[in-house]
Amino acid sequence: MPKSAVSPLAKYRSMRDPQKTPEPFTSNDIDHDNLVFVIQKHKATALHYDFRLQVYKAMPSWAVPKGPSLDSTVKRLAMKTEDHPLDYRHFEGIIPEGEYGAGPVIIWDYGTYLPEIEVAKGQRKIIKEKKEGEKIMAAGIEKGEIKFFINGKKIKGSFALVKTKGFAGPNAWLLIKHKDRFAKEGYDAKDFPKSAKTAKTIEDLQK
Ligand code: MN
Image 1 (spheres, rainbow, N blue to C red):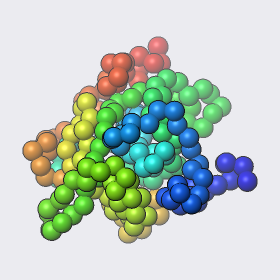
Image 2 (tube, rainbow, N blue to C red):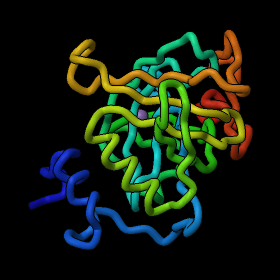
Image 3 (cartoon, rainbow, N blue to C red):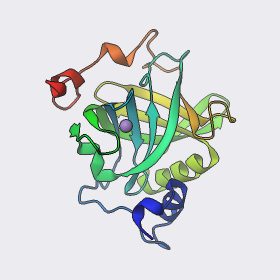
C-alpha cells in the first residue's frame, strides 16, 4: 500500500508497538534521553502553528490557528493533522508552490517535553522515563487527552491537549495551559514572531 493511502490513525496504531510492527518513520536524529517537540509557524492558505510532539519516531501533530497561549484562561482550537516524521522538526523554509501546504515555515519554538499524568484532581506527576512516557502519550492520544510539560525556548510549563466531544468536528482538540508558575495572562503567540532557531520571521522568508 502506498504511504499516502495509510490513514493517520492506521499509521499511529502501527507506531504504538514498535516491537510488533515496523515503524512507519525512521530517523537519524534521536535524542535517547528526551522526548522532543517543535512548533512550526506555517503560512499556508491560512496562518497556523503546527504543534508536534514526539512519540517514538513520529510526531503526532495539531494545527493551532492562533498558536499556543500561556494564558491559563484561554483554550486554543487545535486540529489533529497527520503525524510527521521526527526529522521534520528541523525544517524551516518555503514549501514550494504546488506542494501540499505551500508557503513559508519557521521553527517558532522547539525543545524537549515530559509527559504528565494526573494523580489527583489538579495534581500532576511528571514522567521522566522516556519509554514509559511514550506509552502514556500513545494511550492518551488514542483516548483523546494528554498532559505534558514543555521546555521550549519561548514557552514553558504544563499543558493539556483534550479532544472535544464533536464540537468543531472529529479532529478538533483544545490546547490549554495549566495554572502553574509559567502561566502568563494575555500571552499571545503573534507578539513573538521570530524563529526560535534563526530569529527570522515568516515575512523574512517571503522577501
Ligand atoms: Mn501546517
